[in-house]
Length: 220
Image 1 (cartoon, rainbow, N blue to C red):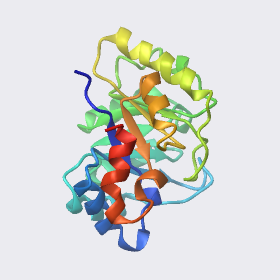
Image 2: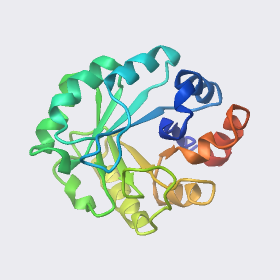
Image 3: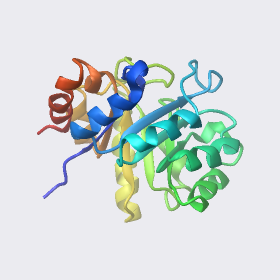
């Protein structure tokens, strides 16, 4: 039996005035991971949160913190986010001079290491990283803002990365982030995704709607 897809609500779409409550609410509603979008206003055109907020939220859930670092240079912040309570640290190849070294550092901190591919970044970027990582994050929008539309060309990339992962024989999560809703989620899953990041589609309707939103995204 195929395991149901994991849902990682992006707190970028949560109510920031009550962020701890929002994290608890999506946890109770059935979220598998909590996705934390970290943006620096430099690598991407937006500024969000830092390690202190991650640390403050850590006590609100025992679910894995899936921390997506859209910051450059990224290496100098790895330790801080690890110490703050991240379980997964995902970085972009463009965010530092030596992506393999960055992955090694994440692993040395005892965390799962992810590599994120922007819409214009080819799957081939993973050729010499696939044996070292725990997660691949395919961005199906250009990173920086929530609420964008899914870029259809990324389905081919999801399929290509799925083949790479299967060929490796390793347990590597294939995550997709950007424009995920009840219409695009099945397409991403069909292409090979097994983790879906969803912000707007999870948090719409308020806490009473979260469980239903998550279930629909999962296709159950």
